[in-house]
Length: 173
Image (cartoon, rainbow, N blue to C red; front, side, top):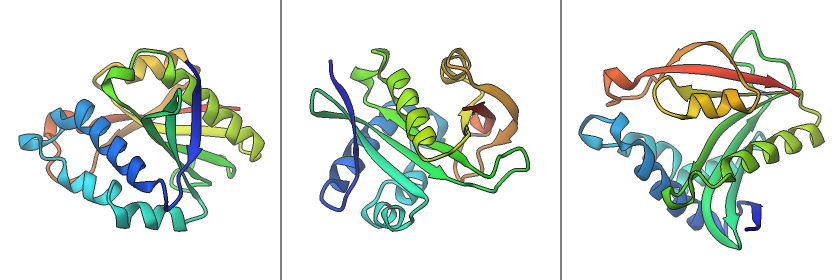
């Protein structure tokens, strides 16, 4: 299986939105009261949200393809200054969302490697991310060299109280 990462453009943003929305709903509706993730989806996976991200030079959006078929999305933000522990040259891994039928096939690891290579090519020395305390993602990131930095909370309306706890993880390049 050939995995590639295609930078999103205005011409391909509908694919990014469609695959992102589907994969998000397949994996994350349990986080939301009444499984209503509309506030998150409206803020992140609409035409206006994606156009805004594409206009921001610090936002990088990609479609993940397996043998040319769109199977996921990837989003990174460069040079965040949100926390003191961050180096000046960092990359926030905002999203790796894969369609459910493509999860567990090694694509997530390939995506992490892609982000690390992208970061190195762009003279970044740290990747960081948020992950839920519950679920399998934490072990995946730790297995791939990330370490827990501190606790965080998901601060969005309508998130179930029992699902708000998160970790911030980081790896040095």
